[in-house]
Image 1 (cartoon, helix red, strand yellow):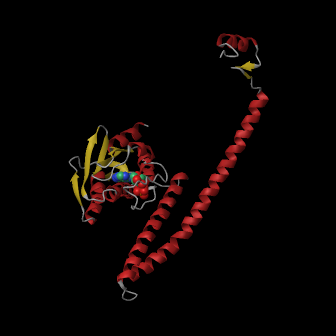
Image 2 (cartoon, rainbow, N blue to C red):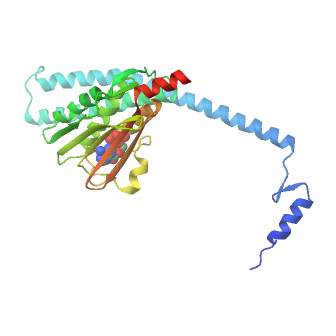
Image 3 (cartoon, rainbow, N blue to C red):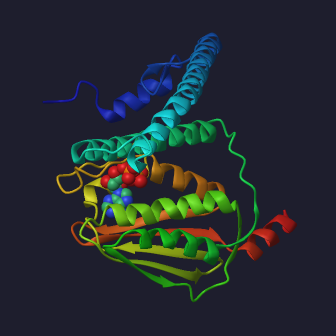
Amino acid sequence: MRAAVEPGRAAVSVAEDDTLVGGFPAQTEADEAEEVVSLRLRLDRMTALDKLKSDFMNLTTHELRSPLAIVYGYLSMMESGMLGELSPELREAVASSIQSVELMTQLVSELVEMARLDETRLDLTREPVDLAEVVAEAGVRVESSDRHQLRLDLAASPAPVLGDRGQLLRVFGNIVDNAVKYSPAGGEIGIRMRRSGRQVAVDITDPGLGIAPSDMDRLFTRFGRIVTAANEGIGGTGLGLYLCRELVRRLGGDITATSVEGRGSTFTVRLPAAHRVAAARTQG
Ligand code: ADP
């Protein structure tokens, strides 16, 4: 079938008729002004909705924290036998309730953190921190599992970076916890710190379930839980890696991952070495 307008002819008629631009009627100043007003209105509405969402989130998370702490407190007392001897069935029920409350508490605290990040309310102190020390402290979490062993290589230490020690510990703790959690068969969790140009890089390697290539782009997204047949029973919120990467990016670094499904994963955290950050600041 022939095109209604031949490409060469269309170009000529557009050039000849100044009410047409690219085949569409040209926009007048009045049209443009109207469009700007409508865009501004839409932006105002979206900002108001966003504020409403943040207020709602702050309120609910705040209101959820106290009752959760009370439930956790009572369950812990029951587990320790302080409220009387428990039958084996009840002991099992209490243990599984504690696990659920822990997951809910984690979700609430991650939601609070996410709201803070969104509102850029999160204050990150930037002081010299020895990353080797933080990484070693995070690695201790592997030892709480009797199926996993830790291989720690901190040959590049000391490795000063500028950051917030508490937040960095959270980031590495989270990635190490994931390495253990998603390696249910056990095995060796490797943590290696190295210099990479002007950055310090830390590779956290696990021999676990791995991630399919098609799921890799969801890893660091909000609520990016990837549920597969292999990890179905493993609890999580899907917020941990999103928060980790946001925090690391705010410190001028990044987190990347490589993985082979069924064989394991490596998460690499890169942060600018402290002397470089300090030099850049002096120049700026
Ligand atoms: P979650 O709370 O679900 O663990 P994360 O944000 O920490 O949330 O991780 C997002 C998803 O990435 C997880 O649901 C899991 O499927 C996958 N994932 C994260 N770390 C690993 C890992 N070390 N091995 C395999 N899959 C992982």
